[in-house]
Image (cartoon, rainbow, N blue to C red; front, top):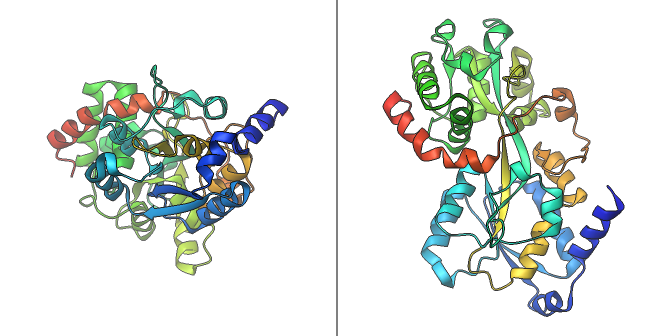
Amino acid sequence: MSIARRSLLAAALALSPATAALADEKVLNLYSARHYQTDEALYANFTKATGIKINRVDTDDAGLLARLKSEGAASPADVVLLVDAARLWQAEATGLFLPIKSAVLEERIPAQLRAAPTAAGTAWFGLSTRARMVVYNKLAVKKADVQTYQDLGDPKNKGRLCTRSGSHPYNLSLFGSLHEHLGPERTETLLKGMVANMAREPKGGDTDQIKAVASGECTIGLTNSYYLARMMRSSKPEDREAVEKIGYVFPNQQTWGTHVNIAGGAVARHTKNREVAIRFLEYLSSTEAQNYFANGNNEWPAVPGVRPANPALDAMGSFKTETIPIAVVGSNFPKVQQMLDRAGFK
């Protein structure tokens, strides 16, 4: 890390007089959809550094958004952590976030991994990343047949594909990205091709798709990278056996690169602790916190140059990623949902 970056982060964690006054309450109200035990150390270290206690509400993304809407201006939330750009975009669109300006976050989080800036500031910031990968059964599928996302809708793969729901945010984000790269007509054609190639109706989560590919229930699937990395690091014999049977691909390496999504954070619209909330988000961009994200939940850091010690991520190696702004992907979600409905992608 450069001296300039270290000084910015030191300033972020140091309590200004205004921040110190807010810290007298010793509480930051965090609404989090991150259900990973390894994040506990993040919160404990922030409290140790600042004296500010983290009071958490943990539930899924949909539950958090519903709660914020119902609480309105009476909401005690200061910071909101959500998983996937689809949910962050939805929350921003419904006015649940307070745009902010932060030199630390603007320097450390790449522009394509945050909301489009406005005069008031930026509504949300990506804090960790995950790739949308293709997995395949090594005994039944040639790697050459699954080099691109477009291959998933090609007739050569008829009867091979399994996925989770097309309307799940992980898939909505992927298809929103494809809409940007391919345009509406080619994207809808691809979605119809994927439906025609299904080995079964969409169901389950990403881990279920990996296991289904390994068992032969289907032979090609989609997964976020951290689910696969988790199985690669697992000590369970059944997980290790499944991983041995599958291959994986970072799609579109010869064109625009693999789709990468985020988990991110924002300041809640009606926070009473704006300055402390910003400091907490800045802390989550620190090298220490970025390493916790990577080593605890097998995600890549959002901050360039951070190199976590994670054997599964190391084994996956480097790959080309797309560079379109994740906020632009979000603007395509309503159009993509209509395409899914027309294609019969459940």
